[in-house]
Length: 116
Image 1 (cartoon, rainbow, N blue to C red):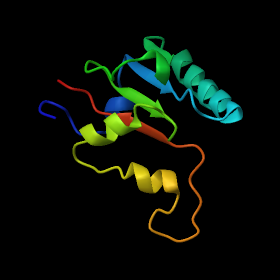
Image 2 (cartoon, rainbow, N blue to C red):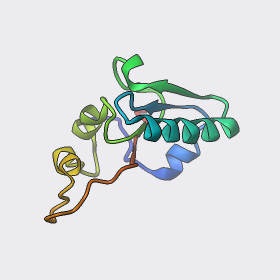
Image 3 (spheres, helix red, strand yellow):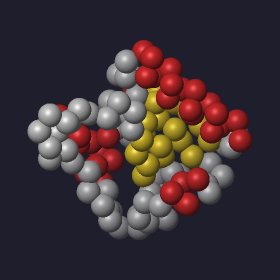
């Protein structure tokens, strides 16, 4: 996307405000872990908002976003809009990662860049 900066952890972690999207389809225990992680981050960054993925119609353009979990309903959009890297969502969800018998990762995070 034009005007979007490449994903960088320093831009994400250094931002004063942002959005953390929790996956509504995550198994209960995993969802609780994501929520604890989000609250812990928000405790030191009060201008970060936490929301469930089913409460947000589209990803915002004005702030960094943490998409937590491979179950996150916005992951497809994130993968399609990605610049500077690729995200093979079907392979990740299948758990093969190019290897036979590999298991899918349970807890994963993704972060989007900020459009400027």
